[in-house]
Image 1 (cartoon, rainbow, N blue to C red):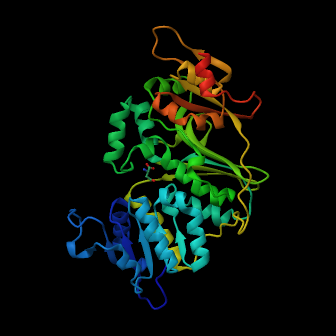
Image 2 (cartoon, rainbow, N blue to C red):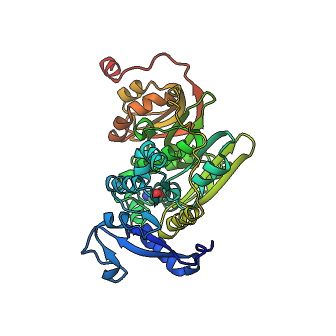
Image 3 (cartoon, rainbow, N blue to C red):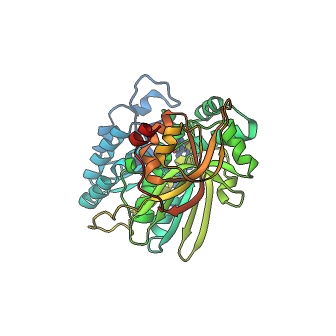
Length: 423
Ligand code: HSE
């Protein structure tokens, strides 16, 4: 571990939040005093909650930590994204150095967080926010600062990967597997964030800033998850020698901008993501000159996420800050990415929704009266999937990409209203 400051006085950390990540970090720092950090103050929200440290270690006004000049570094690891933004932006306005693990908050507010750092000289690091212990942000930001990236993709959510693994390996029921992921502390308080792929979407949005120089509104990025997955879908993949994984895909475009989406995907055995199981995350980076890199590691849990926070604390002590090298200082946002056609496996899509989506070039189809399992494989525009995302979720439809993508060749997309009228 890195040595403490030359004075040998430990670096004083103010810790805001003492949940899974806060406790993981605290434990790591206790086990390794030679790292030279001391958790000087801990602020939490709930005064009545039972905690594994004596009550006198805790206080209940996080703002007091922000206003304490004897704290060298601040760590924000609370659940509430709005309160996290209030605290972190306030700290940055004071020019402070802060570490956060809150992916939803960073994804939603990155433009303001970057502007605050530039205006007031503070620093914000958030390695723990994307794929836990995998050092993906710092590597993309620093090591690949100048080299163009061809593609970044990966499994960015441990809970949904855990559920898919349990369903395939042990024929577990979806609800039972989800309850296990929650019990093991991987899942978000609201499991929809994991299962409907809002969580990996936040991570993809954060990576897009570093990998593609693009500040995206999370709502502009398609996220489809596994809330509607069934044993039949798992079997469909297995019969073809594939596995279902929730895969985030970021493809920088030559003229600027990028295509970014997160959906289930049928993954072939020759993909490095095929072997990423249970709560593990995997990231594939393809760079113009370096070629393909692959990282697999723990993306959730107290110690792995605490490990990423520790790495950021050490980096802050060394004066590190993100370069955002691909993000022009004053540039307007890149033009909107052109629409694409994705080949998808579409199960249990009502006929009118299928027509509204404009499924074309159907290469496989199963539908018979009396059977509850019906599916089709064909091409759909990314824009249409995004437009009908909520209808797909609500209607019990399961969608998985096959991985084949092509430029838009079809006629203008049909409207749901027109399709419904025609049905
Ligand atoms: N709920 C998240 C996951 C935790 O399952 O990956 C880490 O961000």
